[in-house]
Length: 261
Image (cartoon, rainbow, N blue to C red; front, side, top):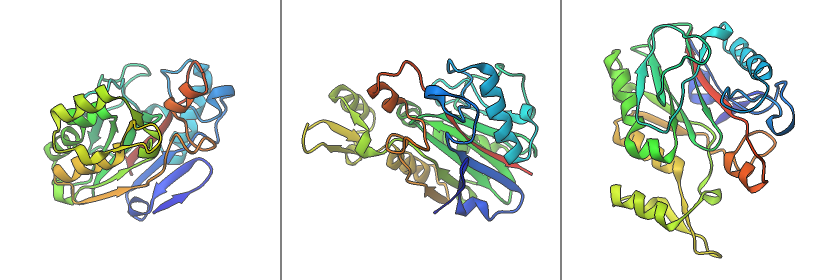
């Protein structure tokens, strides 16, 4: 279930918990224009950096932290997860695709535009995590790496609640035969995450379903999926694939973040 306002989508399962704040932020409520309209939070885009900085400051304010404590990584579609205990300067973030912390006041953010953002929380250990799970990262083990990093800080997998945010849906995620072959060579029992389009016969991949399965495989105790499609919801969400279909030369990124109070 989802609670929402203009700028932020919240999972009901996390929204009712004292001591944390979180949000799967939309593309609305910012200052960017054109193809980036309006809450583009991606420093890696070709948007005006001043606009991106202001957009991220607005997100930080909603989460209750200073702008410099809204953190994001240099994401590379990997299975690298890092433990965070202090903020870093703009543009100096680690090269990784997930981060975890037990330090209050550090907002862990991941940037997406079709890949799956996943937020994690262990209430007893007071450990949080955020992961960027594209198909490569999910296949290589980013979910398990995030859980393992949380365990190092005292979490237990069965206590962790994970929420999958907006990502491209299976209906919109057409993939080539080589993609499917490469995937099934690594995961031969994952045929069920592919369906064939009735018209074209092309395969479509269930990214969020696969991420949920990897969460279950990692022993995560509670798994929620907001079931919102980035490609289908042009008003609220950025989508890399949709930008390609529109012939645009770049795209905005939405941020999903969680912080311990």
